[in-house]
Length: 150
Image (cartoon, rainbow, N blue to C red; front, side, top):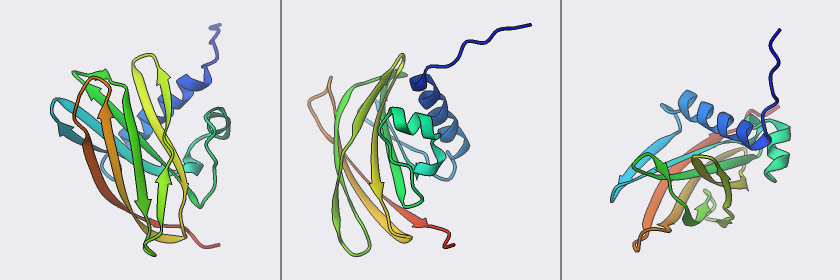
């Protein structure tokens, strides 16, 4: 009989984000290349994150909340960066994104949790400043969200 060691919560988050990026790559995950860096970014409904993982990383789970995930890599190595951004909804309401850094062996994630309306198109504007680089990358993208109305 094999004995399995339990995963650490941060390892579960890594596995979740990696599996989500693989499963949802065609629909949501994107990569932009810039000056030797790969900028990975995605947004997903916060309900996809298991409650214990969300609690460990201060992520509020709700049908009306999304998580934005940014990862910076260079030569297949995680790179620390300063990430700041805003989002704007269809009503032109501007929201500041509060990114939290999650460091794990071989990975660094920047996560932001925000509220959305039941039918919304969000415009993201995010600046990414890798710690080992003097220039700043401006990432702009849009996402449409449609919640099921019960």
